[in-house]
Length: 327
Image 1 (cartoon, one colour):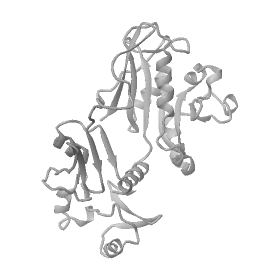
Image 2 (tube, rainbow, N blue to C red; image 1 turned 180 degrees about the vertical axis):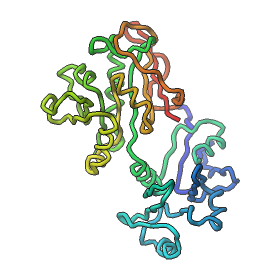
Image 3 (spheres, rainbow, N blue to C red; image 1 turned 90 degrees about the horizontal axis):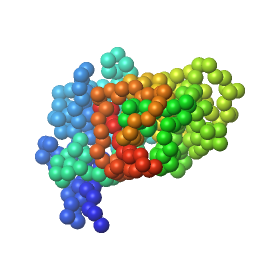
Image 4 (cartoon, rainbow, N blue to C red; image 1 turned 135 degrees about the vertical axis):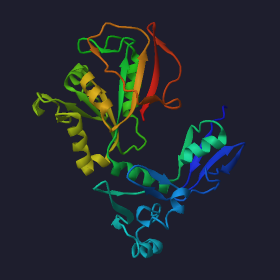
């Protein structure tokens, strides 16, 4: 059985598992714990030991409430002297701070430290429950993100006459599994697409099952779509709609952009874009729809255990799966 590097993250420590033993990894300051401190200026932020050292000089920009409840005696004592607005949100202390004339409420590089210790990539990183929930809360507060998924030919083609110019059952299966996959069985994913992409899906398969379908169009009306399909005029309006509906937002795990070319262009340019899941078909095909140029700030993610590795072949067509992340 192959040995896979692994790391475990608790609230303020990182552990690597090596030679059958757990090693608490020293950080860049040589300490085996990293204080849960964050400080920020107009241009940058600092985390951990460096921030703790400046706490006495700059208390207004230093926080250490993560992993505590609002009724914690230490939190209550600190609130009396803290030059920040500390809110009680469902028994969790949240901080309201003004930065660049905007008020934000938020909770607040262990994996990199572990990889230096292991001298290799830590593929599996297990985060204990309390910081995991804090990370999820922080992601929710920061705003919804999305991924793109697309199959593209060597000549950057993605479609022909409203459909796909190739027949690759395994690639369609990969698309279906990837856009359906959830870690929380009580949630589902969202697929967002343009009008032509939606009507390019065979009638028997639309709307795409087990996912919330959102169609972007300024010419369609709700009567043109199935009752369970949502209609929005553009990508940003769709994202705002999802963000503002708390009940709907809480039921969503991952948002996928699935086409077409104009939607892909807007999505790749958006700050909300996280990753691009791309199937690179290593042949050219006749196409009438093409993928816009991928911006230079997308870089390949080399280790993703969910992605089939190596060259795939079907019907004499070779293709590879890749994941690019926006930096």
